[in-house]
Image 1 (spheres, each protein chain N blue to C red):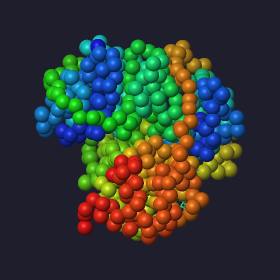
Image 2: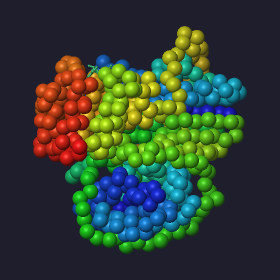
Image 3: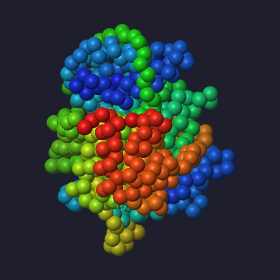
Image 4: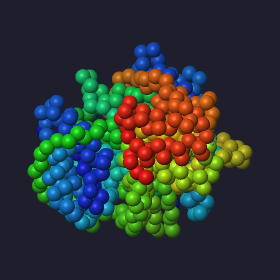
Length: 324
Length: 249
Ligand SMILES: Cc1cc2nc3c(=O)[nH]c(=O)nc-3n(C[C@H](O)[C@H](O)[C@H](O)COP(=O)(O)OP(=O)(O)OC[C@H]3O[C@@H](n4cnc5c(N)ncnc54)[C@H](O)[C@@H]3O)c2cc1C
């Protein structure tokens, strides 16, 4: 038996969440003496990258090397996946709980007639239960899947791959029942913000709230993010007011993030904001109000005016990193 | 055109989350329930806007749940929609919800189905995709913009560090999030009109009866041990703590 993993890639580079998922699957496989098979869709620039998936725990790589699969399409990908899983008589498939994974996993589960559990954060315990955040991070549930055939998605930033040695065996795989003519979603344009760390993949996030008074004051937030190699985020009113783009909005009605370090600047820490960020490993709060609720969820804090504290913090980090 | 919007009932965002002493179930006492924000603010409002643009559109709402979801459905009807359907079933998990809705779709026939990006209680993020998979329709998830010119749907969705713009024909399932529409507050006329709109209760189809998941128990997150405050002016100490103690930089 093998565990199948969706190794999602963009222009030949594998997504961080996909590598985490491979690593997670390899931990699971080790317990049950199974092997991990990575499934890669679309053309790839660097063939070596396929064999290198072995470093993350893949024993075999099935590469569906077709130009018509370069653009993601949940329907098409699910059909190809289902063909692979059926041919290999598989029972378990794991995908990252990221933008594509969240679309593909339920589609595949429906077509492959499998049980579905999304956004898990742990390996199964001795009762076969997976942990999953519920109520947008305000609680954890232990959930078990009843059907034998299972599709899981793993929340990003929960498993950190530790370097392994090894190369995977790469095989080309061609679907027999799926082809280009079945595509019903035509991708017209892809826009990526160059040089920025995507919020969902960031291990450090610098986030600003209404306490920053206006979009013109985001220079220091960007600068702090830059010296830390971090992504930037914001609270909901900041996105609603158009100070920052919508995709930076985190919280219960925005993005849920769980970086290693979340730095909240001028954010009060309303329950809806905390819901989206309290999975972060460490939280630093900078707020001039000592009564701000965010301090109760913080690990470290500075009670002070952001306009004074942040520039000094940037200097302190530069000094620590030896940047002048 | 015929549009279906999937509506879910969730605990209010400010609800205090607590569980029964055996940790097996969510304590509903004193909790306010609302329409799941992604369903209300984004999926429903975008559908209502399309009906405003194409007045001959038929707009239906559906929920899978007990009689306690009816006030939520009425509230949704006050924002817009011609009729609502409730599949009488207490679902546990994505499969049951999607299977129940798929049965209705096959019977009633729709061109476009909207769901919210996820519910804010179980955060499954799967009903739209599972439903599309059961119907074998194309699916676009996490849409931030959508336009329809009478033939082609152009939809923008979020991807890692950017966005993707794609075209599709109907039928189509779309899961919606922030950006696709702006929240609307129902007005008095809408609330009055909603009272007399049809709300049909349907028995759950046999294939939706069996849950595929089982919740063993819940727990609240461990309490933080307390914040370590650093004096303003002493930012270098914070950097040291982040490096030596937390080991995150
Ligand atoms: C249904 C619903 C869903 C919601 N979903 C979300 C969500 O997903 N995400 C979200 O963020 N919010 C959400 N909210 C809104 C949430 O309730 C809060 O209103 C919001 O998080 C407040 O944003 P803020 O902290 O930036 O602003 P404020 O509450 O205005 O806080 C500003 C903070 O800045 C501090 N400050 C001011 N000046 C300075 C200074 N010079 N230096 C340092 N600190 C300063 C103040 O002390 C204050 O604590 C939701 C609300 C509802 C009703």
